[in-house]
Length: 270
Image 1 (cartoon, helix red, strand yellow):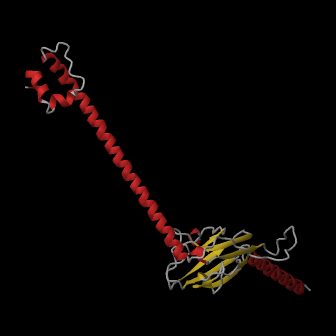
Image 2 (spheres, rainbow, N blue to C red; image 1 turned 180 degrees about the vertical axis):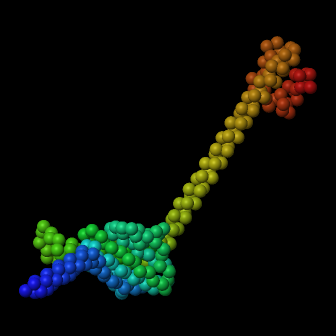
């Protein structure tokens, strides 16, 4: 009887141990992973009924939607089949402790042509609708973007019924020209504006130099014109009040080529 009771206790302890271990494993279980493989290529698109070169992801325009659940880990392998560097940004994704995955110039290196890069994201504690888009070389004007949907976890109820439908709507500006032509046009305008700004700076500098030169000449003229007047007035002789003809510039005429006034000043000119 005692042996039976001991075996029962051992079985009970074993069951409790395995139950606790299982519960601990569930608590420490890693969040789910979702894997995506994308190939970025050029392709024809007709957003305004006119054929133009667009950027496709897996042959789709817009790109494929990302369906996920709160706390999911997203592993997105992007292969760049374009002839120029390509970079994706994830609008609204928080990227906690991995901001280098954000996909903007300066934090993430562009994907070179013919190469790939794997983004590792986690939609930690997030729910809602977001989107991704290319962030280089005006690529966004050609496509390469798509929606991101983050649903709440099934075990966390929401206070409203499920929607009858769920659709991704992306709104943007479209032109009949390719993104390369638009980029060249804007770069040309920017170069022109930079040239105009530089020209304006040069003109301002010239005006400042002219004003400084004029001010310096005026001050020099004022300082030099006072001395000859007093000395000349004391040497005039027959001109008692020491006044010169009203049309005479003292500084110019005393030192200049008007010999008739030089002769009248006599020895004052040396």
